Image (cartoon, rainbow, N blue to C red; front, side):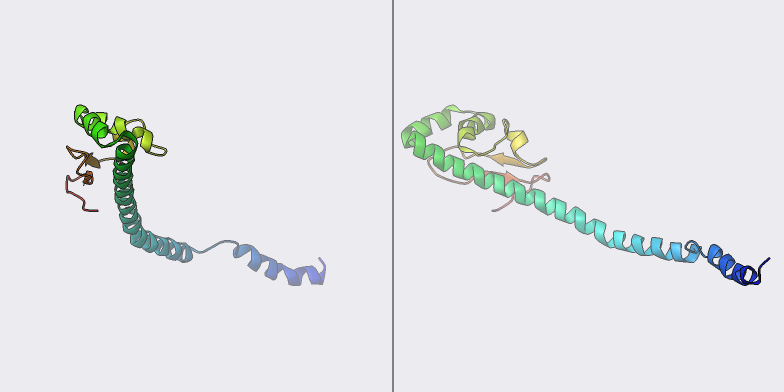
Length: 141
C-alpha cells in the first residue's frame, strides 16, 4: 500500500460517515414546519371564508346593477309588470340573466355555496337584493 493512500483513508472514512442529517436536525426541521403550519392554517381558512363573503357581496351588487339595466331597457311599466309576473326567485333571476356578464344559468350556481339572495317584491322601489350567509344572518352591504 502506498503511504499517500493510507494517509487519505481516515479522511475518506470521515466524509462517508457524514453524508446525511442527524436525527436531531430532522426533528428540529419537522417541529419548525409544524409550528409554521399551526400558525398559517387558521389564517388560510379565514381568508377563504372572507373571500366567499366578498364574492357573495359582489354577486349581489351585480344583481342590483342588472335590475337597474332591466328597468332601463324594458321601461318602468313593462319592467314592473314582468317583475310581478315572475313569482319565484328563479323566475326573477331569469329576467335579469341577459343583463349579467358571465353569469351562471341558475341562481344557486351564481351565488357561492350557502349564500342566498332575496329579491325585492317591487322592482320600481330600486331596493337592493337581500343577502344572507350560510348561518342565515343578513349581510348589510
